[in-house]
Length: 214
Image 1 (spheres, rainbow, N blue to C red):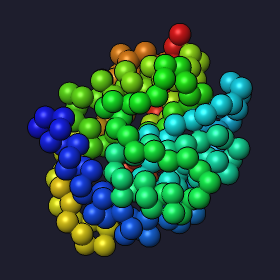
Image 2 (image 1 turned 30 degrees about the horizontal axis):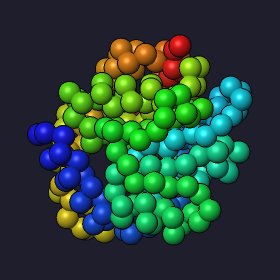
Image 3 (image 1 turned 135 degrees about the vertical axis):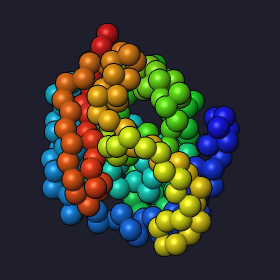
Image 4 (image 1 turned 60 degrees about the vertical axis):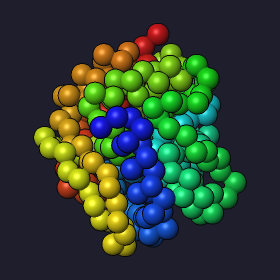
């Protein structure tokens, strides 16, 4: 599928489910202690390099953005879906949320202290992940941390319904940590840590910490 096709399907699907999605995931971090610890570590890494703005790319309805803000990080969110951004602004007034695509990330070079892609690369086809990660590297300052969360596996599933039973049309790509780590290295990130875990967030989730090399 071409870029315009899967992006349009993803945007429309998440516009459709935005309100229901927010209700489903709103309190999910309360059930995921390991993910909370991961986000706390990421926040510490950002503050250790002097702080600054942090992009939550594919932010959805803003729960991770808001959590990082609560940890003292100057986080803002970007999402492809105007519907998701509308709900994010409603639920987290005072925080910055923008409509945008990770395939054409509208941020200046080296403008963010760190970047999070929390289960947001899962809809990007394999042959376009490298281009997306190149955008990530471009906008992160040298030495800045990157946090990526994803579903672990070896398959792609077509999701046709979700979040309140609403219709969707998105492909969900399950990947092995070694493959994601390889993509990060090829894109100019040093991989500093990786782990897998099982929780309410994912039946088997992968977490990678990277750092932009100069």
